[in-house]
Figure (spheres, one colour):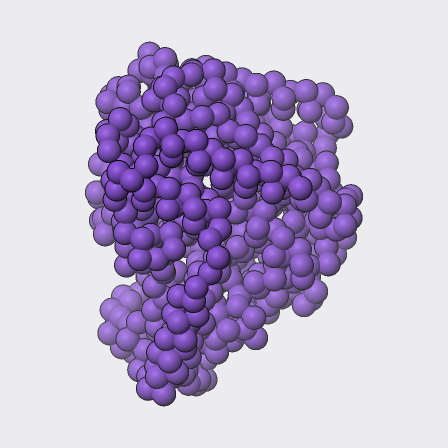
Length: 635
């Protein structure tokens, strides 16, 4: 089965990986000197252990990966960064060596960046001629400054390590608390295992070479003082609905906190979130405040469900899905456009998260690891209803979704090209999937917005990957630029959130905070541009769209072999098989099918476009088909 170092990779990526795996054969890397068992999460959501080996030889700075399964671009990038940071920390010139990694896993695909910390430790061990303690494992991505980034599937990975008898687990800073449970306490009390958070590769190295079986001194991570500018005066009235929503969320956390044991871990989590959200609200960072409260609410809700059975969780999932399907959105208008888009976006994010959860639940025996995903979907739907009420209250002149179909297709195609050419940001693929789902459902407003998320995040990561260390301070957003987004609510809100990340970067010095700030800055620009594109089409003739494929667009992702690997052989026969299979799939896809409600809606839009039916007839019939579809969902 496909395996991911990060939980929840898309079926699109898995399909791409499956197609390419047939093209390549890998030979073994001989006599690897350093080895580590590294936890991962497979496509079924189960924690497993892979084996990673490393060898360093005289060379010219090459970094190569040889794998038993297939390997993705993200994992390749992790290996390169890990080797660079390990060499820097070891005080050696990487240009005089070649680094060879071998990943052994009982799976078809190795995907994601969360093996970065382990790769860095292995490379360091080779550069220094040292031996990593055999009862240690580590998870976490690695950035260009050596910092260890957050990853998914923490609980599953810790459990897999415990089952294998490992006694020391290194996690990214801030990830020991899962669903209201502090793994540093839980693992020690229940399994005699030490779970330690590390901030960067330097801290990892201090722990990885201690004696087998020994307890380590936990690194101290005092929270740096955060200096926030007050940006309240720079915000326009357009953002006030989210300010009110953030206050509601903070009040909800306070109510929940009052019912908890004040000494519990989850109570500590809520207190910290309430304090930080209140500080952010006071200084004009409304999205940041809402986001802090949102993340804490997910922890609280997951904790509240910690004793639920798998059957009980599935019942809750079905109930939530039914409630979502029955929900009727406010009509998009020329006045409520942004808030309507915000509400619809979160509905589709919840839908994607529930789909992933159901897929994992089908093969997982335990409910506990599924709870954060359920809580996230549940709270996205809560946010959907809150934002949609804001849209409903604004009123305005109704706008047909067909107005934005061609524009949404263009935005998704552009996002697809960006992510396919250089897939460097894992968040981008989620938004690409969600945008495609929205487009297929006829919600072109949400589709255009999600495409902006995908493009902005991926393009920002590319900018950062090409930037030199001295360039980074100049990439951080500046307070005075917030006013340029006065006419765009979400652009304002996300830019203020970028300023919050920049303040965190200035206090912590962490590259991860810089990355967040630059991504959010890019998102603000993208959303302002999309708003202009959506607004400019209101009241104009509906644009034609390429309908050569069922939805007019086709999402693809590129998966590449691991660099200039001298052991890869190209299988010509496999290419032929893939081509034949592609022809058969295409033929099957083009078979005649009865018209669905969505097909009829598409034909109506074409009729309106070609002048064969009036706008009044279009509105009447499209409402009929949409209501028929809604009735069918309710049965």
